[in-house]
Image (cartoon, rainbow, N blue to C red; front, side, top):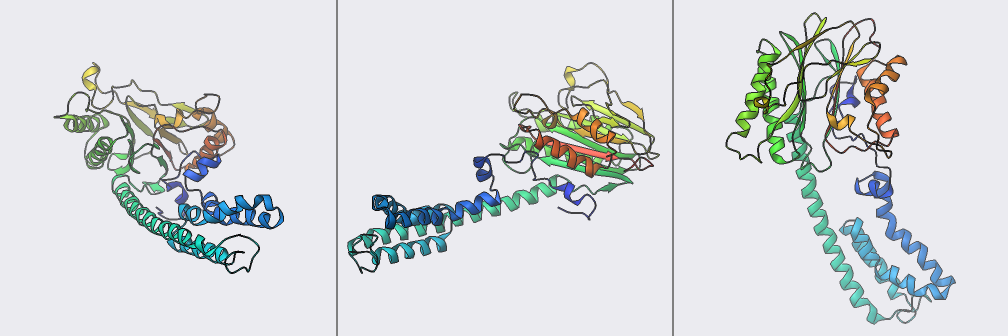
Length: 389
């Protein structure tokens, strides 16, 4: 997903903030180095055992096992061509054994050993072929999921209305697809730049449905609604319509922060619906605290009217909106990710560009060993001006 060179690497929605740091994590995540090692493992096993059979006769039984199971090991991590080649290699080695052709002192094999080896090899080849068909089908489904992701989640350009924008998004590991409960968007409107970052309760397909509905409502109404209070009411109604006809345990709600930057870029307006307050980064990072509203879909539980918080902006200011999946990532000591202190350290070092800030925060998250247990979204916006670096 690339929209020009500037900030292109920023828009890597499928990249996780948590790098695989154990052997099993690298294997299960499809790490290229681990995948190559698995493919070569049958040959490594054979190369390590067969020479010992010539030097140490006591090792011959172990080498026999490695030789006989070579097609099965190959089929586990390779395709039918490699498995068939491994089968032919085993047949050739067994045929050259002492009691068959007699070309090699090892293995002590006879012609009667060939039929079961050929049968097992053919079966392993068929299984490898079937496994590849299943993998190809899963890859096709992944491509469909990526297409759905691109249709639901916007490919935000690096600059919107003169404001630099960077987005990081990652679904929960247990999510049924590439689209999870988090959502975001940035729109240039007559009222200025309007943005939303939110989090729908849960991780199931019903969550994806509500995510799509809320994003559609925001994209449509952000262009025409006169203020954030009206836009918030529209999104609240969207959740109510989604919950209509569902029983109490199937109904959903969503937290969200709605942001509006005026056309003159001198004022920011914020509405909080049960969501973490965005950060305004100038000299240091400070939350733009507004009186919190209940989450979308739960406004009946709140007595106050929609409160819009305003704050003054200056050239070069940075706004950071995020979901709780980011700040609730924990390290081995159980400490949560210290977003504000990390931002302050990078700003003090002169880093304010959204793309660079994202890279630094990602390195902090990975380097600190923080584990993500929920969907993660970070939206960083920077106003044009003399402080922009």
